[in-house]
Image (cartoon, rainbow, N blue to C red; front, side, top):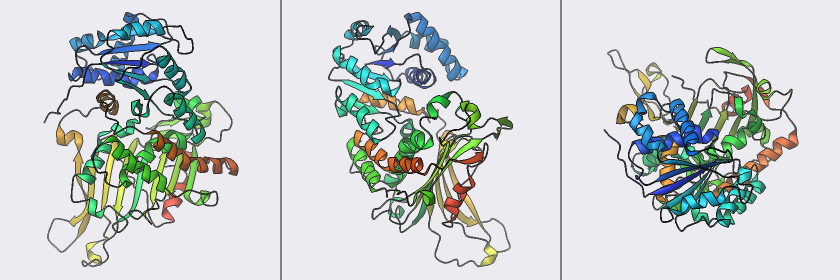
Length: 493
């Protein structure tokens, strides 16, 4: 089976921060793969922009190094790499200086004024407003212009509002694409297909049939080179406010009337506004935050967070577990258990929907324990879906039941390379399809729910609970779910 490649309209993509880690690790490899699959029209251009004084050839060499490092050798055919590099040009632009490089960028873009024009701001958020002002002031906005911004979109509701205001002064909301790469993952989109394209699940997708939902985003790496940024953010801001709440919305939202950007985002917004606020009184019972100490990972010793940070103390959490509730008719009484952290035993992201137990077993004790059905959607490392069912253990000698999965691995089922999230999302920007991007009111509604948790932690002055690197977080996270008679799903292969 081969995937269907649909070409996009001709475009010019300007990447600000083109010499940064995001561009090298994600954007350039993603664009190369779309070029290699002949999805990008021949006249389309990639225009790199940063403060460094480089020539086109200098930047093409840097791009080739990035492809060598982040694209498998078997996918780097010399002729494909050469033709991709030919698309790339470089302009030195200092966003903070009005006359530094902006005129050069305008001259380069003049040739493609009738194409789709996208500006990717792969820079620190404090530069979003400055760069957008420069784009507007130098007349670089056309009717087909879009701007793409990355998280973090603020550190609180107030800062997110200020950031959105700064970008919104220059661009219309319909031109702003707030990217969350988790929404570009194949499994995340298949969640929508499972729910809304099959009669099997949607009738059961409610409090009458679902016992609880778990969302886990686990990383086995530490903060490493991101320690400086991470210590100003923490796991709640870095992962829960954006990635995990977006996943929760897709699980919990009502069916939109069509698969269209605002219809989808309207329903996600309703979920965010229905989240039960976590008050200071409830904070200890329904939230856990932790910080890893030295331990072992992947067979070897690893330092603790404070060692990586180079400090003696920090109140920043590297692990969060939460119990969230949605106050509406579909989900009343169904807990959503969330956890995310660094230096956990495995890199593993999944959504687990646990259905209610059957009301009565007809098989007797000899058949064994009946385990509730579970739908497990793996986002990484191996994207796929498992539906856990009870079946009879083959063989003579009576009825013995086993809990086994119906397993669909995307890689094995479709026998085709699955595009990375950035590949899909970049092409959606060019198409003008905002379905998988966050709208301003979504971002601010998420912060409105997150802020009281952050404020409560700060007011308590209680340090994050310590956990050993290579474990599943503090013991309090286990207690959080087991108090309700449930257990975290931990399936490491």
